[in-house]
Amino acid sequence: LDSQKPFSWSPGCPQVLQQLRSKYGGLYGQDNVILSGTHTHSGPGGYFQYTLFWITSKGLIRPALSSIVNGIVKSIDIAHENMKRGRLFINRGTVENSQINRSPFSYLKNPESERNRYSSNTDKEMVVLKMVDEDGHELGLISWFAVHPVSMNNSNHLVNSDNVGYASYLFEQEKNKGMLPGEGSFVAAFASSNLGDVSSNTRGPFCASTGESCDNPQSSCPVGGAAMCMAQGPGKDMFESTRIIGQNLYLKAKELYEEASQEVTGPLSSAHQWVNMSDVSVELNATHRVKTCKPALGHSFAAGTIDGVGAFNFTQGSVEGDPFWDQIRDQLLGEPSNETKACHKPKPILFSTGEMTWPHPWHPDIVDVQIAAIGSLAILAVPGEFTTMSGRRLREAVKSEFDSHGTRGMNVVIAGLCNVYTHYITTYEEYQVQRYEAASTIYGPHTLSAYIQLYRGLAKAINATEELPRGPEPPLFNVTTLTLLPALGVESAPANKNFGDVLEEVRQEYREVRGEVAKVTFVGGNPRNSAENATEHNFLTVEKYSSISSSWRAVLNDASWDTRFYWSKGSRGQSNVTIEWHIPAGAEPGVYRLRYFGHYKKRLLLLGTVTVPFEGSSSAFHVAAP
Image (tube, rainbow, N blue to C red; front, side):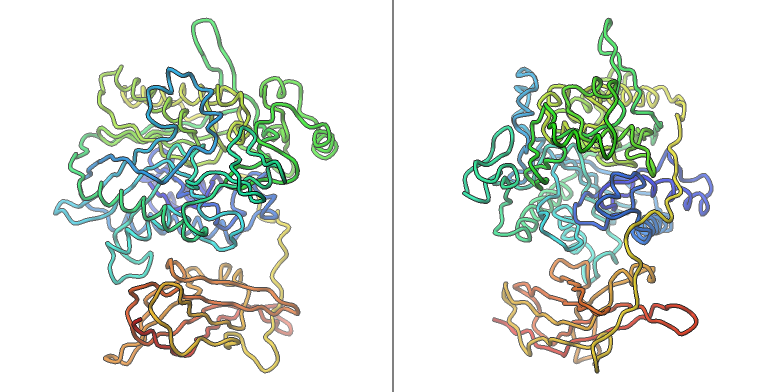
């Protein structure tokens, strides 16, 4: 189970499986491989094959797709080469002060009798799966917890893995002491669960213009409307909020990991199907059958959430369309069919994506559903973001299915954002309110009922050890040339300067106290050059000098929490790169330098252009005790 993907998936899944098949034959396939997202909203875009997701990235970005696919395959290669017999232990515990429900008015539409069974409108339980080898040597963990990684808000322009990534970073740095991020053998995966309506911005929504609360059904402010209603994290800024929430997750996972004593034993089994989610017939009871719908997004989708507001005058909770926007939609994209409108009611459709096919389908019809069972642990690999209550219903239904076939006491875990991305899944009752999550439930009001039916079928198949029909395989489109992102041009350095030269130097001395920042600016190259021409690449290192060996050693890189890399595009093919090291309290005193590694594009007379690697270094500087 690989949990190191940015946000949503699709073409990479078959491409990963193709590479695995070429290396390992039939050992790894769709039946026993789950790609589950370590969720972030600050990752590179342009790797998802469905058209809707190309809008913000200006089409397919081949280097982004290739980097992700190759990185996942490499991680599986490393795991395969280091495979050994081992033991699994499971533990559970409550995480406090790390989440709120961002759509409480939707949650309240669920039956009171159902809500009364739970102490909170979010799932506060963390599940940790601990892995050791036969001799007890530590190998890693997977932690499942329901929280959106939205501590970094939408003003951020730095690629990062948000609060769950920081939790993983802390755990791995502790277990892989002396190693740079990503280099140690211990792996700590902080995976997604039913986080659909769960925010990490624990102070809740406030009006940016007035400071008053905007915790209302429309998430709107008296001045400025919905665009001014934004949730705030526990810290003074998004970096501190990321650190606080990530540390909360890390500390609880560490506690559960260290105390895990319940061993997971028993057979390993799995069930997988592809399903056309736009045409699933669901039996609600003995007299009523309903169907899912062709994909569509509602008006409230464009409103965004309190974690990241949308644009124009869209608001959450819209159960009626807007004549102005509907007319623009009809002129540009075409009017939704009457059948799709009726199927999605009460959702007013903004984008009828299931009826939009140029240049490729805008949303998937064919979706993966999958369960992997390890003894008493059942991992439900779901292709989207289930809300709190929809996740509870799914877990309960699958557990009941296992119980009814004699497999009692199963630990049922929802692993979110697996294999393909299909937005959100609300309960039928939450759907009626049409906040963001409901407007983004793309297969209509009965989506959850369809998934419950499908996952019960998977659980039944596992119990009966029977093979399920594979279902219709998803299409893989030829998207190699569909991009509006301009090709990289020839770059140049300022007069009398070379790439990697220092433009603004570091100070000679810093104190190892919080708030001190060592910063240097270089003549830079477009970082896309490095992404397109280097299989593995660090953009920066922080290096410490050893007087004993008279050598420099890298102690931090671009994946380290305390480093930041900024690229600034100038005119005439010129650009700058600024590297920062936010020196933490407790940093080891000594002599340091900041190094930069990049690529630039150069024109050759008859051979077109070539990409040239270069590097730069700051002067040495001293970090002294306070």
